[in-house]
Length: 312
Image (tube, rainbow, N blue to C red; front, side, top):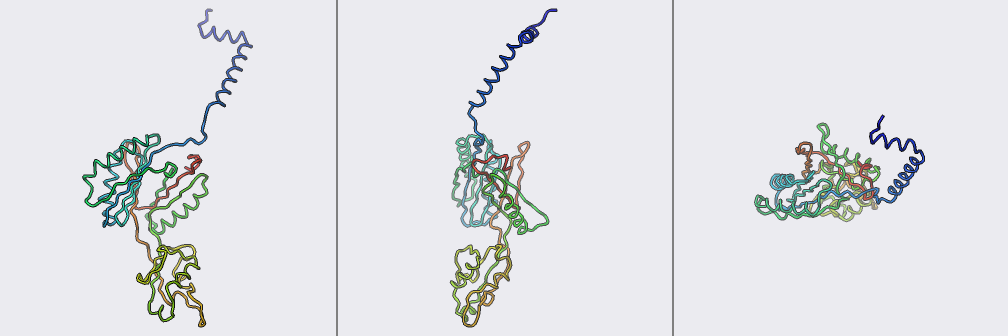
């Protein structure tokens, strides 16, 4: 029976066992040399170009910034080839911040040129009086590797933000995670409303109240207390969580006993006004855009040497 060429090759190895072992051993040695000599990086630096666009619209409120600046800017950058998602914040005072993330592997220089050209070509549609846009590159290590959007029909914005902070605290134990930020929702706030007559009657100065608050580890966002304002907003912390905690703080101790804050001021619990309108627009299947807004967003970046799969 005549063998074909594959059969003849097989016969050579069957009839020459030593030759087969020699070839197998040689392949094993060369494979080992190739494996150990090939350069490799255990945590390769994956580059996904990202940019931040800042536009100022002096005198505009948050809604005007959203409708006249942020949304048109979002639509402009989402039409650019290679853009994966867009994160925006419209703030009071007229500032719009739009972060643009490109897909992994896109050329950073080409992406920035395209982004700038596309925005400049649409500037004729921008409202009169804006300043910018200013475009800057974002360090790849500062770009969130994952963003968690939270929405609820049962929780109010204050409760949702509080839940997000608790979740963010738990995420700090994730190996390689860093820059965990919570954006959106509303904060509870305690406001101190001073009674000038009571302060004068007891001879207590504003500096004494400020020092008493600092001794009690109360955070003063404004950094100072001004009598002209007549009240001071304070962000609620674990140390001071309700009006009674603040009212019972001892301001001064004298010959006639202690004077507590409630004797010279009123403490009112309020909800801090929403300071920015946050939106996340993601490109999903078939090129469609999914928009997430009016919720709370937790963003997580990774350490430079961390493995992205461990974080996500």
